[in-house]
Image (cartoon, rainbow, N blue to C red; front, top):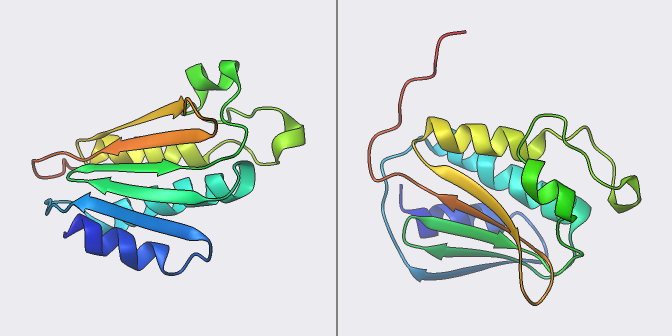
Length: 139
């Protein structure tokens, strides 16, 4: 997958979201899983963040950032856990978006990290693997 072109195609469907690519890369990955990750992150930014939402591609690294209130301190530690929800004044949901995105990233051999930007807002970083995705574990 050409990560830059792929991310741009997803961002085109989202008014107000900006794509920023400076280091294009091609990775061997499952595009359906990658789309799910990016869509979940963009949904989360739309629901809990603030504009502008920027998706930056830096080689195998994708960073989704917004200018909203960021993650509450307690959410930084547990944002990728299933059913983790924060302050209801900041939005509603059952807390699966980030956990699904993190799980999909792990299946792809990558990782997902959440942080707050020093200038304000949330930042979620997806590191894609440089190897082939693993098979899903049997349930």
